[in-house]
Length: 437
Image (tube, rainbow, N blue to C red; front, side):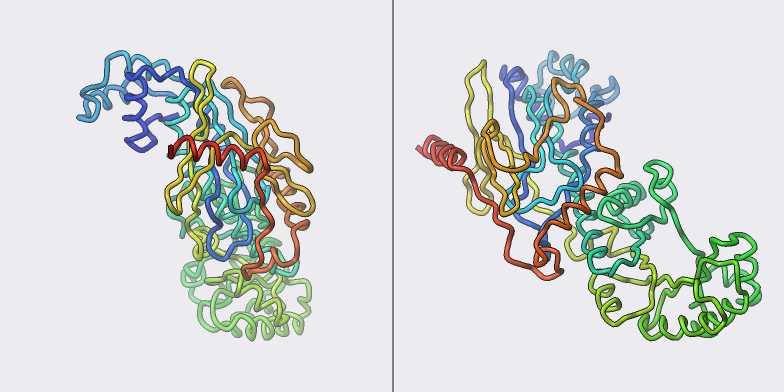
């Protein structure tokens, strides 16, 4: 894995740690949620396999090391540091919550414990790897929650910030409950159901709409979804109905989706196409889906692109990567940040979840309920195969179903109780006194 895929200061700190004789000190870093994204009552953890892949394959090529040698920031670095980079592999531990687990403000998502250079360099990649998919999975869950049992399909790659973001976003959306994706690579790579219709260019490429519909039906048979809004939506619906079976259904991509879906449903039913489905797309988000469902729109499937692939209303997440412990030849020193509005708390932690609350405790404490942070990598080796994508999706669905109704609403609700154990509180106060003395 490309060791240069990080911020420069991770590498300059690595050189400084090495030359200061600190490379053997074992540091514990924690990714935690400082606060929830806007309009969210929870987030769904995602992106853990990408973190695992990065850590298990972290290395530097000879060419990359020569590049670093040529940077002004490394002029004072010792030659031994570059030899160290040639040999560098991740030999530490990773503890993480399972994908699909809901998380709340103040809770850790994962913990990395390793020699300090191995633990510092991953910061940039790890934050990026978990933040984006967690946002998308959480957004998808909101849409699925209000869809009234109708399928939500991820259509967002063309609006994603990069093509690869589209693939990872499709994976995250599937964890959040989407029924499938339009992204073929995501289907191939992860086994996600793929689905799609046709572009307006298909209709425009033929002399008339009726011919375009016949040719699409010839190509796709029972998978045919006729895009009916290129010229006149209701006339398009009539032509699709005249084309008849075989077809899956029709797609609306513009206009008043409530009124049009009702009119189109009537046209299809009058033609004896009661089994033909209606898909709706076009700048949809969870609020639009909720309104259509509440109004009784006869829409069977919602296709969502931009809003989902970019988590448009909450595109950032206040996740932090902070050192919480440092082991120096067997002597443990607890570390924390106490600056205003950017506090981080000392000590490796565990989260215990029961039916009434979450308790953030010190690692090693006993607690009531499910312990969320679990060993994933120990001593640089994967403990056991990661849960499958289907298992992560199932966990998300089951976990969301256990949340209170208020937390599952789109509006911001009273937060789920997250408290700190007495041992952790005592450690925080003792560390504060030590650091501010």
